[in-house]
Length: 127
Image (cartoon, rainbow, N blue to C red; front, side, top):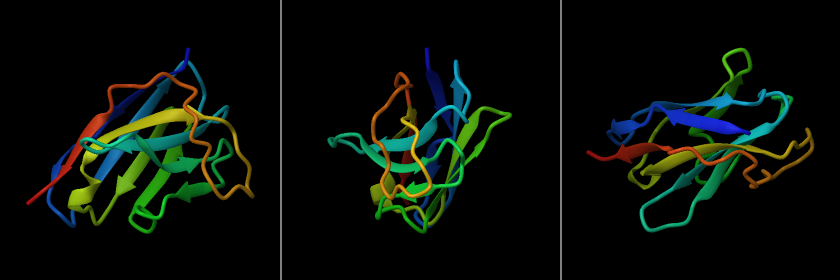
């Protein structure tokens, strides 16, 4: 079974930064692409970024492009989401998931979770 555990959330002021971590168990990060999702209060969970199983194609939704960076450490089985210039509307619970493999030419993420959902990690952006 594919499991993930998210961590790194917290309370941060607007303009601040956080780095989220997602540790995988039961699978290798080069066997799956990985994605970050978030769910804001009273809204549906929404995908925001993904990284291909080769690690050479990183994609972002428009509302985080230029501010968030996805990366991974295969040896540590961990995917990261570096979040800079945070805004109040980034407030949400953040989740990660294994998603279907995709290649270098793909321009949108495959928002299909193949791993079970973790508990997520809460991010609150507020002054």
